[in-house]
Length: 95
Image 1: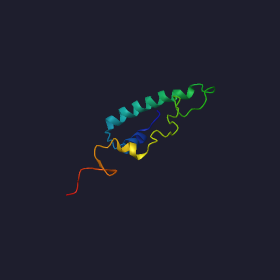
Image 2: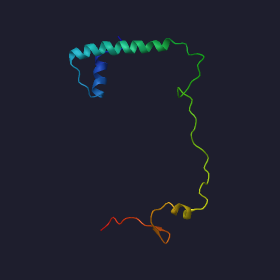
Image 3: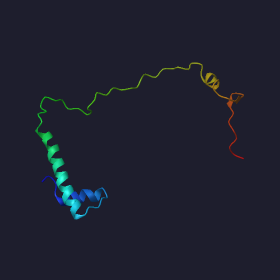
Image 4: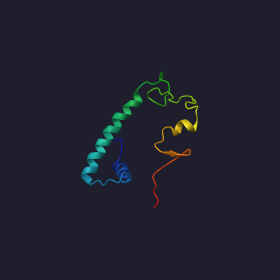
């Protein structure tokens, strides 16, 4: 048996689960079977496998910063719906 009923009750309490005696017996057996199956991974020969932090190769998606709007704020104000004397006009929200 890979897990005792007391250990399973402890895990159940941490997960805020309540188990009665019948559930405890069933889950102790089932979790023990699962742990025994997962334990078979220790039998796999991994001597030639390099250590990895991820299963898939990850690459950085960042790019170099480039100036893309050389005309400055004047060009940005072209996208503003309403403006006056270089200021952006917005609806009044305080009465």
